[in-house]
Amino acid sequence: MIPDWAKEMNCAVTVCDAEGVILYMNDKAKETFASHGNLVGKNLMGCHNDRSKEIIRSLLETGGSNAYTIEKKGVRKMIYQTAWKEDGVVAGLVEISMVIPSDMPHYVRG
Image 1 (tube, rainbow, N blue to C red):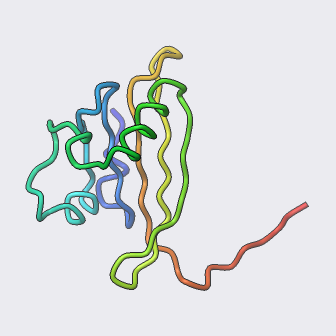
Image 2: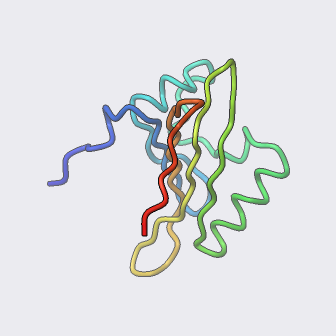
């Protein structure tokens, strides 16, 4: 049996299926979206704008990934979204959201 390795991570992990229905949220994700109630079992399209919905649809169609940073209430975060697959077929998306420092170091390695 695989342990729930993401449950207590210090970043938010949300998983949806190919229809956008949220299958899993770790503790940090639930804490982040607590004001919206329990979102597991709900479709994530209902809480995104048209631009975001198009990105989600594209990721689900192509099996691609999307990464960006945001700042909200003085807190910077990196958002990484990527498709997950079963037997080579896109089965949904995973989003990992983590707080990053404003002066995060960047290293170029050869």
